[in-house]
Structures are given as structure tokens and as C-alpha cells.
Image (tube, rainbow, N blue to C red; front, top):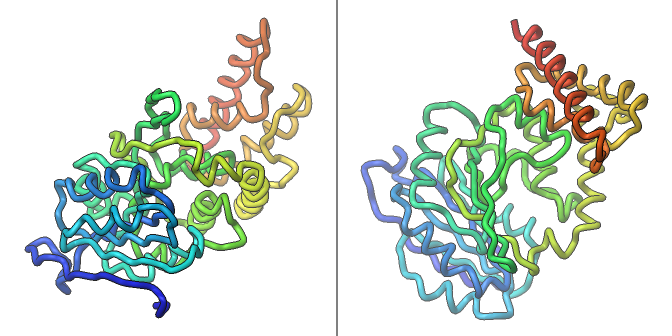
Length: 329
């Protein structure tokens, strides 16, 4: 631990549901940087969990606002407070928390988001039953500027998530709970700055770990103008494209088939080839997920041709899903 940092640690309360070594089953990771506006709500949402056997590690990464003052208001013995004298960045902070964590599982929550009371309980039950190695969930997205709230549209199976990683990040990062051993085996990489979450998930997927999203909204994910993902959009896209190509290569799919809008005859070549290959590599992709994949090869705003585009998408998706089911038989 870096000597210049101020650390406040209190041992968690004993409970019959702790690990056999007396440690909490879950570590909640909460990096914070200039989060004075939202962090109190984030902390309160964790302290209100129906599942009590967790530690909450909050790292204030050199904030210049009142973030540290607000963190200090909370005296729950399950909170571990770490104050950095300088800003070392999100990747370093997340990896640091993983190194300090004592739980069997680590749950992520950003300092500007809010967890619903059953979040930890439901995810612990899911992972303890060995349904997956990494567990996300449906969520609400709150646009802090407009006040508009939208519900997520996610796929839930391991196959769909692995497949959709070829075109997007199909899990909501602050809704994730992951076996701690995975985070320690696959730390966030500084070379993937601004798209580190997507890059991490693709690396873990290629290693064969099982993903799932619970079919229940467990957090509110907040969108606002000060987010890193908003302020570094171009840089994030460049890193994403590089990681996307690496993921396809890892699956054995030529980068010439990289999903992007193509004219009809080109997508009949590269788009259909991609769909066949990904369904051969990943069995049991749903028709809906296959539609989302193939849609990346089509142009938007097709006017009077929209019904035909949708039909094309459905036919290719259905054919691809049949191929994937045959592979699994």
C-alpha cells in the first residue's frame, strides 16, 4: 500500500453467513473521484442491502471536491475508506481494490450509481448456485440532464453475451458481481484506458468463463456530463475497435468480417460469413441476439426499404440460430 495514502479500516461484524475463514462473502468496489453530488446515495444504497455480509471498499482517488468529507460521514463498520493524495486513475484504483478485497465475490458499483436492496442477495444466490462465473443484471438508466429513465434491453444467457461482445458490451459494468479470483487473474489494463470494461470482458470471455444477466433490475445507472465515457468518447471508440478486432481473432473469425454497415452484396458475403462463423464458435445464440448482430451490417434509416431490411435480418438470424443449435446437438 502506498504510504502517502490515508486508510481507515474497521473489521466487519461477525455473522453466521460469513465465509468459513470469518471474512465477508462479498466485497463491494466503489472508486470515487470528485463524486460529491452522488456518492452519498451510492453508499446508502449498499448499506441498505438485504444481504449484510459484505465489505465496502471506497477509494477516494485524489478528489478536489467534498467527496472525502461525505465519505467520512459514514461510520458503518463494513466500510473500508482509503484516501489517495493524488489522482491515479480509474484503472489503477479498481485493480487496487481487487488486491485489497477479502470477499469470495466482488461487486462493482460506481460512485454515481445506485443499487436496489436485493441486488447483492440475488447475485450471491445466483453465483453460489454455480449458474455463472460473472453475473450482471437488468437495470434502469437515468439521464441526469433530462430526467428521463429507460429500462435496459439486455440478453441474459452466456451464449448471447459471448456473441454480443463482438459488437458491444452486453453487460452493465456497475451491475456486475464476479468471482474475485477472476479479477485477480485478469486485472484492468492501462493500455485499454477509456474502454477498459469492454476489453476486460472480452478477455475473460475468450478464457471460457460463463456470463449471465439476471432478469431483474438491480441498479440505476446514471448518465451525466462529467462521466469519463462521455468526455473521452473518441478515445474510447478507438480502443473499443482494437479490442473488438482482437476478440474476433480470438474466436477465429477474420477481421474482414468485422461488423459494420455494408452494401447488400457485401454483407451477403462478409455479414453472412460472420453470422455462420460466430454461430459455429458459440452454440445456442438466440434469434434475437443474432438479429442484433446482423443489424450491425445494415444501414439505418432505410425508408420504404425498412420492412425488407427487417425481413432480411430475421431470415439470416433464424438460419444462423439453427446452425448454432445443430452444433450443440
